[in-house]
Image (cartoon, rainbow, N blue to C red; front, side, top):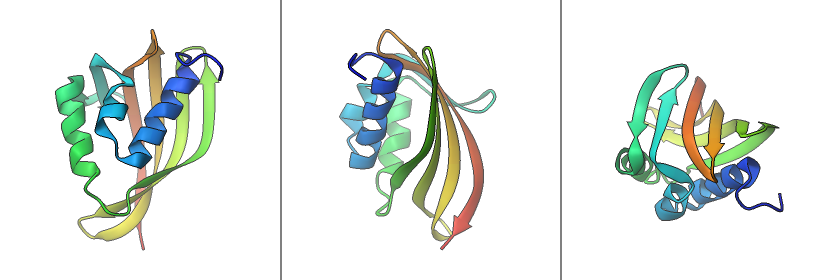
Length: 121
């Protein structure tokens, strides 16, 4: 990962910023007009303002943490399989997520998420 603009380096910075709950560092990995989707095509957020709002709410959860289980890289596409520890309305637990990131010019352009089932503690 010697190239800081490589897809893998960008996604690793994004993951670290997420776990540090650092919105500014996280948004710095996204293009201004980036889009987040629930796979395959349900738009969740577009642009820094909406993406920042999503993360600001999530970052209030006291147990929030993403654990990387597997990562696959093919050119400018990175696929992460993660276990996310969260506080749901029903209580604390975890959810598996597959995140598909497309990186161009050192920034995330699109992120698509496939959500598994919640597992409550």
